[in-house]
Length: 319
Image (cartoon, rainbow, N blue to C red; front, side, top):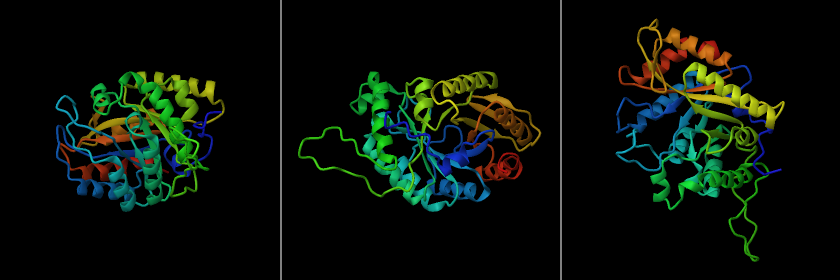
């Protein structure tokens, strides 16, 4: 069996985020306004502390290696490992999730070392979300061929999974006869859970076999139900009887009118809190286990939105 098939081992933090028949809610950082490029990351740390105190289940951090005027997202993201380290030191209970480390553009042993470091600082609260990147010019900038991304993703996943499992194994790229046997520190009490964010160029069967779950983007409800049905069929084919989570990243422009009906936006909704609760209930009933909110703070302060969702929406789901 490939070394990356480690999803059967339970993870307490993964179970808090992805649970059968339940839906948990997280937040994606940074929280920005439309077209905002300069971010106060000290303020983002305050948002993280607040989300932790109010009972959100996860904080998500993106990996954006390079910026370009051709890209739709102008935000100057911090290096994900630096931000995750700061979040680990400033929160106590909430899960920390990379959404997602671009596995094809980083050496898997570097990713393993960073993941183990964050997990140690977070006392076991880290879930390692992994993607393949979808911007061919970035591959060229890093000396990679975008046509190799599917194979690279699988190869790097196997090396990474071996390294962050318990017991940990280092699989070197090359091993001359006189090479020592390497290992990674700090040692972990439990394997770090691996989560596929997007498809990474892989089939849903591959994802169901190797990952604790599948995280995808928001789609209109009927399309999302079809995607979940495809996912469940893949899980039954490849891991029959096992649980695999299904999660969605959803944009949220929360109205200050609690009764405003939901209006579709790109990758999410503008809505009042009552319609938001109804939408999330429908998603739970359709098989979604986790939603991370990409909050827009153009019209309202982010703190107000975080507090309103915590007071009026979370109680329906985080019991």
